[in-house]
Amino acid sequence: MARHNSFANSFTLIILAFLGYFSLLTLATPATPYNSPAYAPLQNLEASTDFIPVLNASALGNSSDSASLQNVSAPVTATYVVYSGNNSAQTTQLRNAIYSIMSLWAIREIGSPDDYLGIEFWIVKMNSYQRLALLKIVPGAEIYENVPVAVRQDLALPSLNTSSIDATGNLDACQRVPPLDLKVVSWPPTKIFPDLRCYAYDNSGVNDAVIYIIEEGIDGIDPEFRNNPIEWHYGPDVIQTQSDDDLDWHGSCAASKAAGVTYGVAKQVRMIVLKSSVSHADVGWAFNYVVSDMYRHPGRRAVVMYASASETPASQIRNVQPWKNMFMRMTNIFQFGGVVVVPSGNEARRSPGIDTLPALYVQTLPVIVVGSVDNDGNMASFSQGEAGVSVWAPGVDVACLKGTGSRFDSGTSFSTGMVAGLVAYFLGMNNPQFQGPQTAQNMKNYLESIAWRRKITGPPNVIWNLQDGSQMCVLSSNITNTLVS
Image (cartoon, rainbow, N blue to C red; front, side):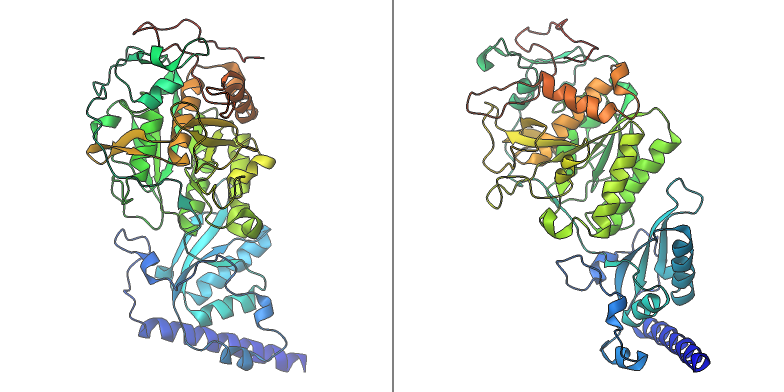
């Protein structure tokens, strides 16, 4: 009897694989290599707003294999992320199963057995029969449709004229006619806002720090970034061009608040652009890349700017594999001495408190969570907080880059950009407290200790760079390389 069941199972798997292969040949899908820049898998996805496992072992139930096949009405093809197993044996089993069922052109492997992280996941274009066959071989495999997992945290306001801003890009430690939001950063506790004449900053050592920009690109050829060395890498679901592919120029705006010569807190920091969409595959790839890159460059002083948040509340997704993987990769980044900066979220009308990921990782990790204030220090109406927010930064009508022009925009994304720039600013000063596995926690403590309340009714921890913008183009001497106790 056991021999008969074994033969029947083997025969069923052969039939499933054959049906999957046959359906791939008959579907109107271009036979293009998966890593082709022209390939756009997101256009072929089934409609879905939730990212739960597509199928699991229980789908087979106690019924026969033929009965299970009757539940799969038609071979619908989509792109999926298949996560590696909990151990090397399960990962090897998954890998062998994937390559035995699917065509090579339909598979992309993120990571490799020789990498520090090993194989993170596979991106696989497959149909319903092939999913069933894979789960029959590896029951409990984590398979997720490659849908968006996050949303950018901007409000996409219309562009306005910012021609009065000083765009000369001077690096003499004082920007004479800065955006008002930059003035806030060098606003000392002893002064009032009307006294501020410039944006003052310390321009020493910032080239030694790196910002990983996880965005759908930036306008890297714009003069705004002429003082920034830029390195580009590309996720699986994006076009490999050095451009900002977000329709609202989200990446350009956030990056310019971090490191632009006109709009940025840090004026000449190196940027590593990880061009990625908000899909499962791209977000997972980006954090995998950061960890692997930091492993290859021990001692690198780096900050990760991730200005997005889950659209779904954390209570519904915390234990879903893509977010579990992000948690693990952030843990790796902290172990390597990196810092991660994320937004608190723009959904204050839904929940005044933080309710999305990765911001809620602040409960267990030293991630820096950023909320938004206006230029007077009042909490922004859209910003989530206050519990769990590490620091606050301007995020209402901030001036930033939009394509070849300028814009005012609002959102915790841009507050996140400013704080990421401030972290890079301090990392570049070679403070011994900002080296090693305690860097993230020390930086978080440091920013909180020097931040101060601008309005009695406003949030307490609004960022400050320890400079005095009321001194017209005179560098303040109060910058320090020791932690404030």
